Amino acid sequence: MRATARQADAVALPPPRDAALLAVALVAVSTSGPLIAATAAPALAIAFWRNAFAGAVLIPVALLRRVGELRALDRRQWALSLLAGALLAGHFATWIPSVTLTTVASSTALVATQPIWAALLASASGRTVGAQVWVGIGVAVLGAALLTGADVSVSGRALLGDLLAVVGGALAAAYVTAGAAVRARISTTSYTAVCYSTCALLLLALCLLTGQQIGGYDAGTWVKLAALTAGAQLLGHSLVNVVLRSTSPTVVSLAILFEVPGAALLAAVWLGQVPPVTALPGLLVLLVGVALVIRAGARAVPVE
Image (cartoon, rainbow, N blue to C red; front, side, top):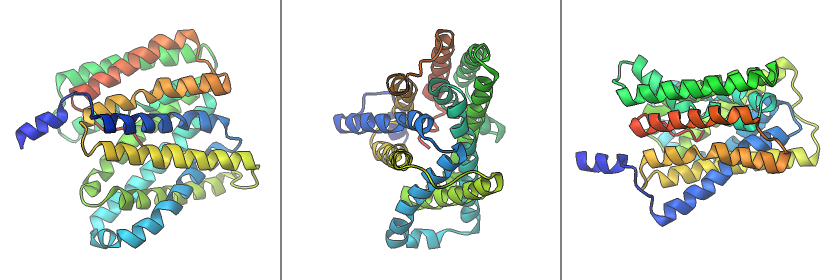
């Protein structure tokens, strides 16, 4: 058992099939930020439709094929699943608006701090966090400070976007932490069906309370919303979970960090959105810090 665990934790190249699937997943998740920035709909409405579409796909599958799993959940597990859905709603309600306020590169990099927050939550719950993790956190905080400092020189709007992205990363870590016990019991399909549905209902309520327009969009906007759901929400998430069956979580987590340059490149080519040169050192230092945390063992995979 210990040998198997050490092998799973090792940083080694994945098998060719996993590498190919991971590459497709990275392309899929890298489209998320640029698609959000290009979609002519309110940010909260984008968050709602992204999860509503995903729930519409997953709920029938879960009811047809996984109903036994759902019935086997006890009250505590249902409570944790619903809490995870609420935290996921908070994640989307903060991160998606951030993409419209700051650059795709900054927003994607700062929300990728999820492993940092996961390590801090683990420490707060009494688990031992190693010295290497704290070094990585320190490096990441320095990078975030440099990045947000560069964005302050651009506008206060960009700074607000940065702060929302950081909160989004923290909520994503809380979402993964809340659902960890449940995910050990049921399939990804059942778990995400519950979470995405809960998330969509809460976001719908928030849209209605704040007067967000949730319909009446042109055809191009609906196509972008469908592409956002099919790519980042379903394809990327599904393929990452397939790869995790036979590839180290550390390798997968490190690979997912390539979403940041991938999203930045797509935003530059498609939207003409190039981050300021002053932001590049902060982006690099931040990603190095997150990579150090992942490598040291705090491996919450930021695929949500």
